[in-house]
Every structure is written in structure tokens, then in C-alpha cells.
Image (tube, rainbow over all chains, first blue to last red; front, side):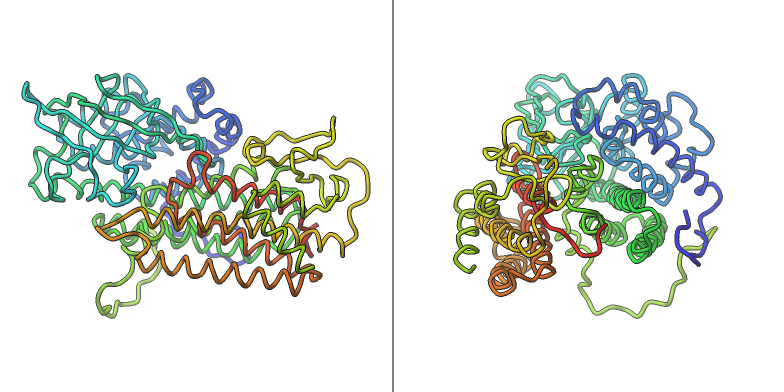
Length: 394
Length: 197
């Protein structure tokens, strides 16, 4: 992974170095299906046939719920945010679009992990193991964007028992093809009344439709509508938690994981673009400044993931990570364009696709302005002790 | 040159990218392109010319054509074409500003219209500065290749900063990011850079 003269070796534990190497091998398979997924992301045949995606689906499932064993190198994936970051950089270096086509637990799984009781987790993950479905996570609404507290989707008591879900969600991955996932709704007017429910499809009143997107089309974004969808009481997450932890606390936990993962995918995409330029201009030394920035971004990302493992409720490390790498990936696309002859973007379909893909990271799970608001200091800073970069074993 | 630049910007703003490109080309065909692909208004593509399929570009009325044999424009004329194309792109960027202003004026967050949020106001103000400075650059430095290239880069950056203000709605569907991306691809076909192979 060292690519710069004099670059110090990465201080990753041996197990994470093996995870990176294994992920890099899988990345080659993702690259093979990248253009097909981009051309027709709703064609499930190449996705179901991909051994790499099948392995990633199981690798991303918590260990007790895996349908079968995974290779030893992949075992650490679910153990830490740092491990997910290490793997996702390498996987996205193959192709982030294909990676996002994986039928993995994803944000729905992170939410069930944070808010589900043991029975709910068992039911959710057993269905994933048996049916291999794509999952969805519905929070964003058409007119409210990132302002979760303004959401209008309602979870009303059903006179015949349980609840009824009314409302709509937009920009939901797998909105049309997902058959299980998590949807957020409010039971009352206050922020504490926001609740997550596990939803399955088909269900009465539950519809979904795809949306065209400029890039990262493997995520199959779409919209969902709920017209009195029945929700049994056992599908409401957080019942066993105190009121302060039933709602957005769980979403923030999930976003902490996923923002780091997206940051890693953005950086992996940036590396892919840089790699493509190097392949098209063999022997050109002009890539060195950008390569140095990418190496620094990776070192920073690793450090932030380790910090986030230590303080999972601190929203700043994932915000800083995503804010930086999402912008860097867009910048690397422009750098690649400038480094190559006129017409190169259309001439090289993967380059063209990656330049579209990198824009998507801006809009996934927190735009840059939302992240800035999370990150900006609100009080006079305390003087922090100097900290060495992440070290092996730390 | 000032009149030509203004006319290309007007076409890009009033009629869109393909109309602006048609004016910017000023009769130049695919053979004039400096690289292995030319971007042309679809209506100007000669019958039988080898076209690289591109769905997003088709939606904007643009086609990518292999130039075949023929001589690229000499550097001075290519730079002038690049300046006219930048003006056309500037017009499409101004279209995007119009759309963004309408969007942020209609949406609220935390009970306040987005257009009153300091981060949003700052981004819109920066966009207006970029529009004015780029326009003057194209008038006073249309013959300076590096200045024209830099103007194109600024427009690509401007479009992205504006598209971000639309949130995911600009990235999905036949959204603003799609138009901006085709604008960028079009420039990539016609702008030659010092130092690139």
C-alpha cells in the first residue's frame, strides 16, 4: 500500500493488512462488472452471479448471523470501524458503483444493531441469510432533505392493534428492489418521538420506484410511499431502550459507521482515478503531488476511524473524514481530466463513470454543509495534547 | 470578440448548451477537435459519422463524434473557439444559478428558508463573483490559451458548487448535475492543455 518514496509503512495490525490485501483481490472482480452495473443497475443477474458480491454480503453480516463461514482474512471486517474503512478503500478502488450494488445489511443493519433487541436482530438477520434481499433505509423526505426533525412520515396507532405507516421517503438505496429495511417515522411532534421500524415487502400500501441518478448507479436510489402500511408492534425498534435512546441516537450511531464507510469509498474512488491516470501515462512523474495527498488522506482516514472506534457517539471524526474525502474525490476527477489528452473522459468509459460516481458521495448520509455544522467548534477550544498518529496496537 | 462572447453566453443561458455550442463552433466540424473526440450539437453531426453513444449527452442535444482524419484547428483559432465555448457554458451556469435560487428560496431547514442560511448565502455570493470574473476574463483574455483553460476549470467548479446546493435533487433524475457534467465533457473535447500528452 506504500506508493511514495520514503512513505513510512502503514502501522496497521497484521490482521487489517491481510484484510486490505484480500479486499484488493475482490476489488478486481468488482471492476469486471463495473460498466455493466452502471449501464443497467436493476439487472440482478450479474449481481447474483458475482462471487465477490456474495462474499461481501456475508462478510458484512454480524458473525452470529452469517449463513456460512468467510475466509480468515475477511473475519475482522465487522470488528471495528477501522476495519470497515481499510476494506472499503480497497474495494472502492475496484469500483464503488458495483460495491454499492451489494445486497448487504448496510444502514438498515447498522440501525438494527443499534436499536434492535435480540429477537429483532435475530429475525432481521435470519431473513437476510435465508432470502439474500437488498435492504433499504428510509429517512430523507422530499422537502426536508437532511432535516430529520422535520420529517412528516407518521406512525399512527392502528385501532385493530399495532401501527399504520403513512408518508413517503426519497433518495433511498434499493427503494424498488429491497424487500426488508428500516424506515423512520414520527409518533408525535417532538424529536424524541422519531422511531425506526423494520419494514418488509410486499406489504399493503407499500410502493417503491427507482430514480435515475448521475452516478453510483449500483445503489439504485429511489422513492418509497406508505399508505397505511401495517406495522406490528414487534417491528418497532428501540422498545427495550430508554426514551432518550430509542430514536435519533440510533440513527447517529448508524451514520457514524456509514459516513466512515462512504469516506473510505470516496477515497478508494479517488485512488482508482489516480491509478487510471498512471496507467494511461506510464512513467509520468507528475502524479506525485496528488499521490502524496491521497496517501495523507488515507493516513488521516485511518486515524479518524480509530478515534471513532474509541468514541462511537462522537460525530466529528466521521464528519471530518467524509467532508475531506468526498471533496478530494471530486478534485481528483478534475485532476485526471487535466492530466490526460482532450476527449479522454468519454474515450475511457471507466474514467467517465468514476467522474460521475464521485459526485454521489457529497449527497449520501450528510451533505458537506451539514457535516460542516457538525464539525465547526461551538465553544472556545480546549488545548488538546499532541497525539501521535494511529499506531499498531492502539 | 466581445459581441461574440456575449452572444454565446446569451445562447447558453436562453437556449441551453447545444445552442451555445453551435455558436461557439462557428462552423468548425469534428475534424477541428484537438483530441480523439469532438463534441457537436447533435443536429450538426454529419450523416454516417462515427458517434460514441452517451445517453446523458443525447438528452442535452450533444453528440461525441470521432473526428477521423483532418487537421485540428491551429492553436490561436482553437483558443478562440475555447473562449466562445466557455461563454456558452457560462450561460448554462447562469441557468443553474436561477434554478438554485428558486430551490433554496422554496425550502426551509430548522424553520428558516435555506436562502437565508449563511453557508448558502456565501456560496451564492461566490457564484456571482465567479460569473462576473469569468465573463471579463473571456473578454480581455480570449486569445490567452491558459486563461481560457482556467476559465473552463472555474466553470466546472462553479457548476459543482451550485449543484451541491440542490442536494440530491440535483444529482437524481434529469437533474442539474447531469447538464453540468455534459457541459464539462464538451469542454474536455475542445480544450487543449499545456503539459498534457
